[in-house]
Length: 316
Ligand SMILES: C[S@@+](CC[C@H](N)C(=O)[O-])C[C@H]1O[C@@H](n2cnc3c(N)ncnc32)[C@H](O)[C@@H]1O
Image (tube, rainbow, N blue to C red; front, side, top):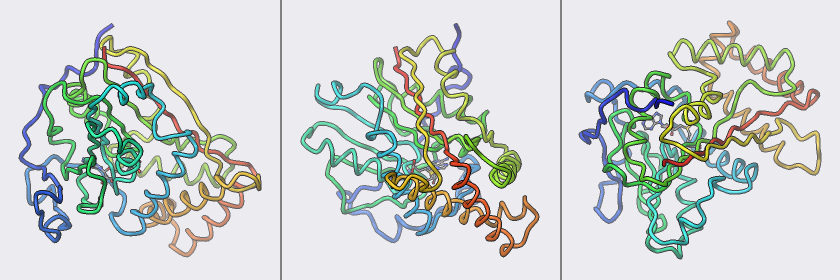
């Protein structure tokens, strides 16, 4: 077996990140200034396409608790022992508002030696009011992770697949992840597969529009189906697992509140994509809203569910 992570020399030049930490008396306004990464810096181009506003921030906060419920916790990797053994450095790549990091920091607050660190190029995470064992770094992952070789015990990656092209994943992001992981450490991906089960014609119409949009951004919309093979085909990883959990998009089962939240969250996601997807569907925004109503009615009737793939593996 070969490995996929050796194509690029590791890139750990840290010119383009900022550590956001209240103890460093960070200027709040400076932290919230939105960096025009590709214009004002030499930072590498990102394909990220979602808005960076309050509605999306709230959606991601809800998304975290929805997935925690779906997956019976914040992670599936067998790392409890690692935490009980003492100091762990845990990294969340593309942490968004930092909800996973804050939740983990709170859960393991008694383990004073562990650190939970979120990285995102949008500084939507809290700066001052947060557990003392949590830290956030504003950085573009494509510029290299601001960590030493063999430094990290656990890496969590939630819904980041479509933020990079497949070649960015293979040539830049994965080799750098491998570089910072300690021997024996774990990596875990959690990601939806838009190619849902029990979907009807409206869902397919939306999904095909989404696929076209992703392809126009040079992103593989089905990258989630590759994660497991990435690790299985790399002899430097072992204990590779994949678990799939199904998120209902509608509350056809009254006892299952998750369906209601699944529908609400997916609805907000599609509203946040309305400018891009209405163009792909060649409809006005009014017609788009009408299609959305039909879509959710259909999801309810078909009992549509979105599979979430949780893939985890251990570095040898
Ligand atoms: C879909 S959100 C997922 C947020 C969080 N992981 C979750 O599961 O709720 C993707 C996040 O990745 C961040 N992101 C995208 N490309 C990035 C890059 N090149 N460097 C750092 N962060 C990036 C975005 O700003 C966004 O917050």
